[in-house]
Length: 320
Image 1 (cartoon, rainbow, N blue to C red):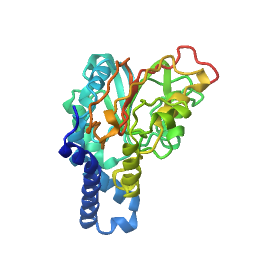
Image 2: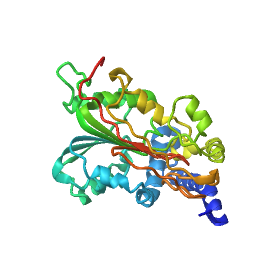
Image 3: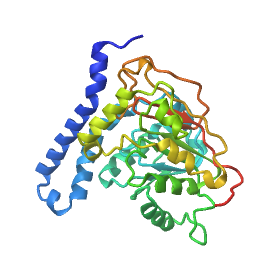
Image 4: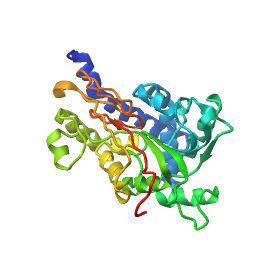
């Protein structure tokens, strides 16, 4: 069914409204702590984002691919939850008996209280441990060492976790390729990586030339809007990179093992390439969404391009 004019307008302006909302929280934080922007700008930005995400996170938490809950319901063993924010997705770890422990890697200390509260509400307070660090190697690895999770020679190459979960976080890490690389090394052989992410929206001509996984109807309008909102400060105010080829980074992370044991990607975009936007919830407005069958464990979410699939680290690791 073709989109209505109102649906198209909503899709086009939603990211702009989110930027405005973020600016409001930046100003609010400056009023509450007027010295902080001068004395510690990073802390000021973290405080502003915490206020922003505490307000919008619960709304966006409900707007995810339905299969995400099904996937996380099968989570088991030791899990690394990357960038859980205020913990609005924790309830999706619904099969608690199969979970040994979850380490929540969250650098935003202003979100830790809400994160622990949501873990408690999900019945996981005894199994959910918050780690105050980022996912990038120089931040994550020292904390894993402090937790006693590294091998005797302080290596992660044998794998630590049965599962690693990234929901709308790889779009904001400072160094994508390095971060994905270290996460792959943290996976045990046979472990799975569950990802639901914003990715760059490219047409099939651009994506296929680079050997990437994009649907033939990737939206040029969507890509132009990504460029537009990036220029308006989306990355600074919302903390998200709209133009990252996260798919390629994830696929390439397993090259040293001759690839993932299994990778199935799904694109969920807008027919006719009209409106598109998902910011941050995966909204595919402006046309009828295209969906193919899922095969399990690795959903990717994109602006106009939603990709998903299953990835397991090979049982037999080579060249690590």
